[in-house]
Image 1 (cartoon, rainbow over the protein chains, first blue to last red):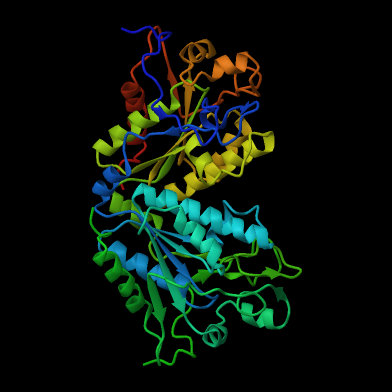
Image 2: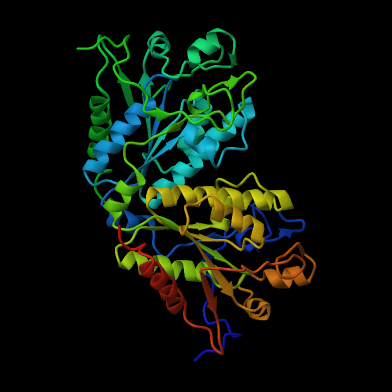
Length: 237
Length: 237
């Protein structure tokens, strides 16, 4: 029997230097190191890794990032996608810009810097879900290319699947499911994407969902995403 | 075939008033409503609900919140727990204070208000994972009762399982796996929990993990948590 005063086990941790000379770190956000930096933090290796969770779930974790104008059908496609994947026994989770604003991002306003922070945080959470092995579906206007590219950059290559809802503004405005375009046109909403704030279309999205003469049903759009995931091997461990 | 100008489908959304008279909302963080509030946001109903994901995973989503001093063995127990649950085919994910500081919370310092924000965000992310159906293991010192209770309050009753690592300071300090107590004693770390900042022990934690004359192996501690989860029905859908 071991005496507990002699450490019977050590914390399973790798020390990362983070570019600082000072490599001692603060355990889970405890204490500030003088003449150190808050970036001096230990990365804990988990004994169950991403690959193990993927094996359990029989899929690969990734982020499906659906971007497009308000009213372009992002949430509708996200729902159709989660339904179709669930029906195949795949584990998904939708991060919706609005939902996250209710919780984690409730401290954020709609100022420019807060909007960027909103997207950054959604990207970071999506990354955690992908690391968990989940197919994480983020449904957010995310109008700026730079913000989306930052989210892409923090994920392993290939794990960020950008889906562009390429629906003309006039169509989105005609739908106006929440009456927001009407308010924006009336000047009651300022900085509304597509009206008085730009939407920067993706330059190289993995998937483009368009309407032709008629708008495909959301299930058909979801199927296009699923075909991509299947082809890239994300629906198997 | 439907003409897309006539909305062929509507966004699947419930409007929540959030205590404001103005119920029109901004789609995924787009635009600021004049004389409105950034809290006026739509909650999107997902077509795959928590109960469906739990059925898929054959478990119930919850948060195991492991709190205790630095060096008390939180991460070690978290790792043993995730290993044991994974071996039973259960889907877990560890949120570690340090890991999250690398990503989502990289903007936070160790100032008092940032520490509270760090815990708030971890609580919100844990809530999302629990909603996803995952058994989310948060391993964070979280020294203040108020911050932990806030995390508890945002979860459905019973879904927040507080695990108190009740290990004496002298033991933690003798272990000092990261050399932090030594630095704190030398005055090189300020505001270190247990040294010059308080640790407020939980008043009614669901589980207390203690050492007696000898320190139980982490697997035995993890088993205590698993017995609790089993008894409360979290290991079945």
